[in-house]
Each structure stands twice: as C-alpha cells, then as structure tokens.
Image 1 (cartoon, one colour):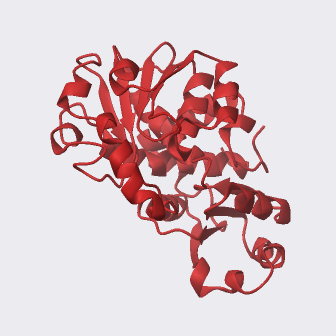
Image 2 (image 1 turned 45 degrees about the horizontal axis):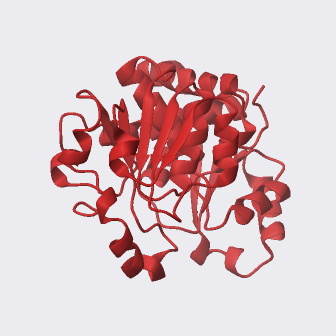
Length: 302
C-alpha cells in the first residue's frame, strides 16, 4: 500500500511496488481520459533549489491532466532561504496534498520529508533520482516488453541517475553493467541493495560494460553542483563517451538512453543521440506518465 508514503529513494520500495507504479504509468498513458479528474481539488507543491525543464513540466502538466493544481516555488523567491526549513515545510504542508522537491543534498529531501505529514517525492538530489529511473524502466518495458533478464549498461559518472537506475533495474530483474573511471563508481549503498535482487558488475571500461547490452545509458559528466570539477572531469571521462564505436559493442537493437540535458560531443555524439536506437524523448515524455501514476498511488487515487 503506497498511500501516504514518501518516495525518497527506490531502496525503500519493493520490486512489487515499483512494478505497480510502472504498470499504472503505462495504463495512464494509454487511457488518460480515465484519470482526468482523479486528483480534482488536489494540490501539489513543487519546490526547486535547482533549475529544471523536464521535472517541472512533467509534474506540473501531469497534475493538471489529473484535474489537480501544481504550485511552482523557486527556492530563491520564497522564504525558504530565510526561515528554518522545518518551519517553512510545516506551513507548506498545511496548504497542499503532496510535495515534490528538487534539491542539492539528500539530507535536504530527508529533512523535508521529516517535517511534512503529506507525501514527499524526491524529484532529484545528489544521491538519487527515483522518478527518472521509473520513467526509464517504463520506457524499456514499452520498447522491449520486459526488463527482467535484459542487460542494462550505464557508462560514465556513477551519479544519482546511475544509483537509481541500478536499484530500480535490479529490483525488476535486469542485469546491471556499469562502466566508470576509477574513483567515479556508484554509491556503495545502491550497489549493495541492487545485488540483493539481480546481477551487478562494475568495470573501469566502457567497452567491457557495454558488451552485448540491450540498453546503453549515459548522463552528463558534470552534474549540477560539480561545476568546480569541470576541468578535471573533462580530462578523465573522454574514453567513456558513447559513440558509434562503443554502441557497436552492444546488441544491434540496443536502446540508447540519456536523461537529458545532454552535452553533445562530450558524453554522447550527435550520431548516437539522434540515431534510430535512441529513445531519449520517449524517456522524457514518460516522466509525466509515470509521475502521474506515482501521485495517484501516494494519494490513494489509483
């Protein structure tokens, strides 16, 4: 039962619960009219420390399409920068039915959830990006008809996207292969959790990680908040660029995925991101559908 729960990380969700959210996302996408008034008179507060395109639009449009209302709150134009976080969240909690927040530190989303009585959704922090992973596996299941048994390879920085992709995929039965430079591996906690459910192998080589993969995924080498590391990272990561040569080690029908925004010419080439195997815009669209399903579940309206 997901009603009233928070979604801070998919480590806290069972394989069954994850599958239920994705399955509902697919149903909502196929028959949006059925759910168009499901969250009538419900309000979503959207708190943003970081800038956003897909996260804001997918949540705001999704809530509107469910008959509810979303309120965008930029951290810098509210008293979230002045008052104590606990006090500000306790006030926000009185006005709305559900809260999502895009923050810098995992401790910040934990503090929001602790202060709020309403469900809280982690819309991105430094350690996890659970909504992105749900949309990613919804896309994989749409394209490949399953996740179980597939080889999903992530190449690049073992960041928040990689952590959530690994946990979510393993809980759905995918075999996870990760290629990162030494010292840029994913969060040990995410790997430990994933290994409880499926195979996870780490490499310090893109070619080894991608070999015979059904899905090849990459993300930016420099995430928001890491700008001071840009020069160093641009020297470390070039051999992990997903290009035609690297895709050649995967299966011929392997999907290419990226959570966007992409830095074309760095982590991925234009040839790959605009290839027939690329599903990056399907991923982006599915953020909205799977988040609609998530909100329906957390508000007990599924």
